[in-house]
Structures are given as C-alpha cells and as structure tokens.
Length: 330
Image (spheres, rainbow, N blue to C red):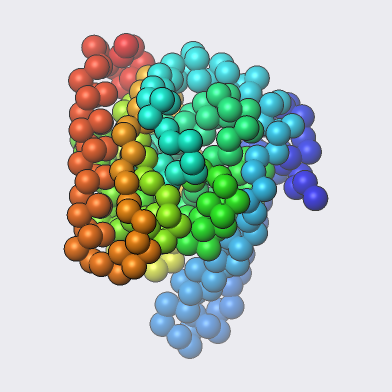
C-alpha cells in the first residue's frame, strides 16, 4: 500500500512536506519532552535512551521495492528546474558504472539537507526512469522524522544499516552510501574540500559480504547551500548528542531564512549553488567473502576508496572559476 506522500500530486507534495511534516516534527519534539520522567529521574541518561529508542523504532519501516514511479515523475517537474537552474548540476562518469549492481560511496555537505546527495538521486532517476533502481540511504534521525521520513521512503531511501542495504543488493538494486554521515555532512565550510569518511569501514565489509564493487563518487559545491561556521563538537558532547542522535556535531550555520543559528534539526532552505558530481572508476572488492574479517585488507580498501574520492574532489574543486558562496561560480 502506498503511503500518503506517494499518493499526492506535485502541489500536494510540497504542502504535505512542509505543513504536515512540520506539524509531525512538532509532535515528535513534544514526545521527547513528554517522555517518562521517572526513567529520567531513576536512571542516568534515561530520557536520552528513550529518544534513542523512539528514533530506532521509527526507522524499522522500510522496503526495497524502489521509488514510487508516479511520485517521482510528478516531482521531476520541480527537480528539472532545481537540477538545471538552481543547482546547475554537472554529473559525469556514467560510462564507468558497472552493469551489475554496485555500491556507490561518496561524501556530502549541507548538514541535514544534503543537496549534493539529493541531486545525485534525482539525476539518477532522470537518466534511468526506474529501469535501474538506486536506493539512497539516510541518517536514522531523518528517517524517523514525520513527513520527511515518509517522503524518503516513497523515493526509495532506506536506513544505512546492513539489513536494509543487504536486502537492496539482493533485490538487484544499486545502493549509495555516505559513510562519513553527520561528521561529513556537517563539516565546517573551511573543510569543504576535505573528504571525511569518518574512519567508518563498515561499508567495505558490506561490499565484500554482498559481493559488489564499490564505485567512488566525488562531488563539490554542496557545502555552499548552507555555510557551517562551526561544528561545535564540545557542545554536542555536552548535550549527549552522540548517544541520543548518533551525532558528534551541533552545527552553527549561516543559512536562509534563519541567518546564524544552531541547527539541531533541518531549519534552512538550501541556497543556490553550483554542484559538480563525478562517478569514478570502480574498486574491485575481490570474490572471497572471508576477506570481510581481514582487518588489513579492509583497511587497504578503505584507504583506496578514500584516496580516489579525495583526488576526484580536488579535481572538481579546481574547475571552479569564481565564487560568492556558490552563487556565481561556473
């Protein structure tokens, strides 16, 4: 059965996303506030555990049936404009994509609303129109949010967990992962050219286990959709965000329309920016599933993927002719 987001028209999509979604987020926050106070009083960090459990329960709703074609086609009226004029996306390297299902691995920017990731998935649909399914992945907090989480599920996004990713590969789909997660997406603007995979090697083990090649993806420009002034890591630690939201950063951003703000949840409208994305040469992971437990091999492949993405990002960054927070770079 299609969820409510998949049944809307293009106009209703926007209304549902921003009105019902914001109402749902409000309820979500109220649930946080109204958690069992006895647990908080009787157990250290009890309320944080409650929030963690609430988020976890909301991420269990996923499937690998692919995107809802009707929804995707309707919303492409908007995405065609965004891809061609607002973000002026240039995506190259399609010829390097293997014919068989692959794990795409990249970096992304923009805090909670990573437009370099969103534009990649939209361009993939525009190219293949459902003939080759790409499952995007997202942070648990985003998958748990009412409105936004429903929308993600309707467009084929799954939790970045082994169970869901394995199911997508088993269904013959491609999957894209951003291993750096929040430490990547929320890195400060001064680190915009630095590839951050967070030393998280689970994606290497996943690729070996699933028997798929890794296709590195380089991108540059998404950092200009919202400017991260500071990562505020000490504040994130003080608030216990790592345990509660799986987040090491409480980003202080300069964005529209709130100006300078601490963005605990999606609170900005992405600014226009020139985004360049390139699919790079695949990395063969071998055909021995036992290599998943070989720490030296996993580390070697991790470094290879990281190096290729960094080289790609450097190349794309050097194509930039001029810039005013991405508004006039060509």
